[in-house]
Image 1 (cartoon, rainbow, N blue to C red):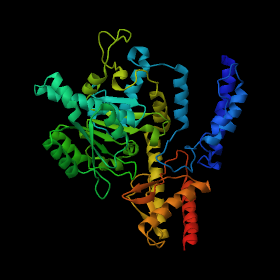
Image 2 (image 1 turned 180 degrees about the vertical axis):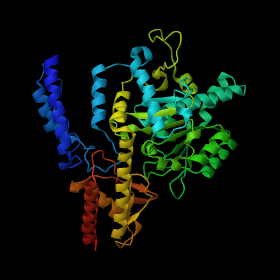
Image 3 (image 1 turned 90 degrees about the vertical axis):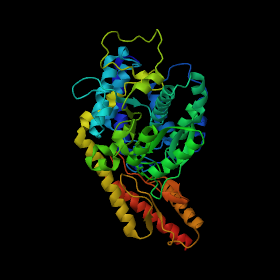
Image 4 (image 1 turned 45 degrees about the vertical axis):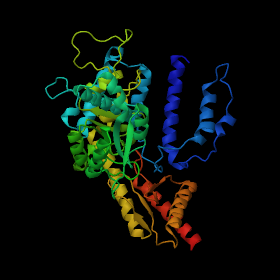
Length: 493
């Protein structure tokens, strides 16, 4: 493909993408294919000779499209959103044009410095403390800063490694030698609630520490008292607490942990405090939500996924640290083939030392496009629109009389179920009813949502967050919920 054909095919692909977005709401959000469907449709070896663009595009429509879950459909209400946008796509196109491997400043100075600038923009937009900014107000370099990770799971691993480094430094300050410290690493304990994302357990497995899962309270929150009690017991057992993750918007219910109380414990016990705001962190762009996050200014690290609710195509997970020292010390490895800038190094960040991979994409471009083309006002309007629709859905479900809300509706997530008194039977029967409701809604094909289990209760948890969704899509969701509920009650009665 030469540049002239690329110009032609590129314009065709833009039209193809635009057509997809114009028509995606007419497709069932959920794929109905069976496992292994694609293997039977594909050759079992790569082609020996080049194939035409036309054949490839036809295969996208006939073979790939049937197996896609349409996350960008305005009728997709599953999990948490993947809120891509056209500005972000344009930024990704420019990133693909450059096709760099930006592991340090020298590789492409603009890639490093744009990430530094844009992460400070984003940190200020969501109200982060100045400790997390790479550049101070006086224009000098700060101790902290932001870095774009692939996912919140990667961010979790990275900050736990930094936390271990901080714990080791503390042990050294007590006079422990290297051999004793190596043996002690297996007694390090990280703390999470039973509502913390599964990435926490995976991170603990990877770095080889113990994971303490603490029961959440009646509102699905990790509390100061529960954390302190767990730490006290572990210290009595000869273990070394070193890390705690608090969540701003849990996966199951969008609950908010006792951030300030947890920060008190982290301070007194010398723990690294990480705040996982993967979903709900975007809401902090709206000042009215910031009182809910009291305590984040005391954290060592904070992370949220711009690719969830901030209009930025996957992958773009924003991580900030208040002090990068332990992070960089833990992840820095120097080689002669990785040249460094000599002389003045202000504003020179080798982001390879802030993450697990060496190579990295020019991801800040798409975030830059989004923040410039939407502006802060457009981003806030995007968030507030979804919260308003979620509140409307909550009101409608309650007014119907057959449903109960199982967790506070704060953001775009509505957790509910059919009431236990609507269909006679045991708690098991009620759970079966709600599981069947999820199945029928998704089999209906007009909308898609997921269910979950909280404290033995099967619930539905539609999340409103589509970039191009409207109140009409939320109204359709309500209509399908009511219609499927009526059919189940009629059959069970």
